[in-house]
Amino acid sequence: MVISRPSRPSGSCEGRWAIIMYIYSIVKIVIRYLTNPLIFLFGFADLFAYFLFVIIPPVINSFLNNIMVALYGNFIDKSYIAQIDYVASLMSNVLFGVIIGFIEWRILQKYLHISLKWMLLTILGIILGFDINIVISRLLNADYFPYELFILWIAISVIQLIYLHKLFKQAEIWVYINAIGWIVFYIIGAAIGYNNIIVFGVMSWLFILLLSFARGITLNELSKYKK
Image 1: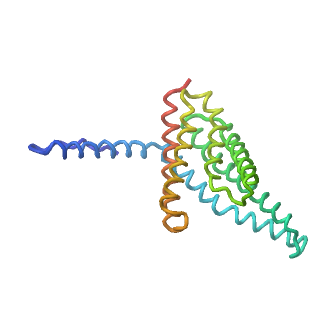
Image 2: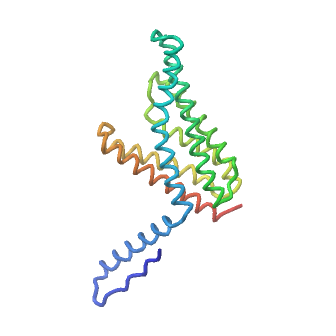
Image 3: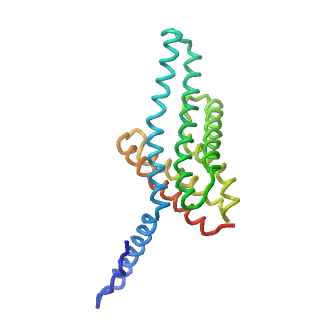
């Protein structure tokens, strides 16, 4: 899709014309990125993986609970319940890593010739982030650590950096983009209010889509600086 440069009308205001050209430049950049198949596919692939991540944990948790009830009846020790929650969370995170790692790898394999290591490192990063969150939660003596997603994605991006650093110059930008993105997420969430479920829910999905596009853009730009 090509947008022709607007022609300046005679006698137009200098300030107004500068605004028009600024908007034109932004629209041109956005369209250029969105028509890039790598960025477009990467963005919606991540969004789809997140959608599955919301659905999968309750299903796994329910499945494991049903097994325990079938084996031990309704008189299950609380320690077993805690173990079920841990195993269900671990399985959900690993499955999420398999899904998002595979989808991203297939896209990156086609456009950047990335190997299967991407998927394996993604899974490893998720396991690392999951365990770090468990340790932090226990140190804080809390059932829920509010910055789990930030820790999780920093762990994933750092592990992925091991591979990216061998391919591209300035690959550490990958970690910075993920870190800054999730910091912005928490700042916006705090401003909106986490109790405002509808607004926060809509904002969360929109943010995930935008961050996914930003991650795709980052990889696309890094591919221009191969080692």
